Length: 238
Image (cartoon, rainbow, N blue to C red; front, side, top):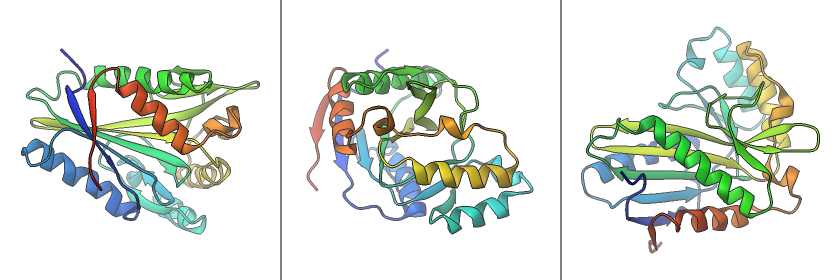
């Protein structure tokens, strides 16, 4: 069974709607695609500084302190409906929301993580990043299908993924950290300390840390090229 719809519309969201509104927009689009109002799509955007907490984070004693710490660093705290732990992103990252219908959306839920991990690894390797798939020890928001980059001293997490499955459709959301990793590392350090979660700050980085000069625009082009091997991409009008 093909993992990707035969045709995808590419929607480039030029301006962030704001931390909470950007998350909600993805859920709105999921409903529209499921109801047949909008075709299968890729939504690409660069977000405002956001600290996206997982549902489990909200139940920890330090959640309030972590939220205040993120605000102090200029990152708006939000709670996403998908799983995972706290993850931070800003305008140096690229978010890709892949949304399509599926009559049995839950059947291949785990397989999607592997497929998209491979796709993003391929895209980063095409740019010269030594990328791989798998959880690295001590990473933030740990996941079996994280995409990491190998550096001279250690590996760093570059792509985190999450999925929302509803009856008849799914939303697969991916965050690629490309530029300016220092603010992300700082806010994660503060928030994970408040939540009393163990992690290794050395695992937080950006693709440009491994390949100086790499830009979000270059990564977006590489991702679309990787997608084009699986589907017909149609760029939607603004």
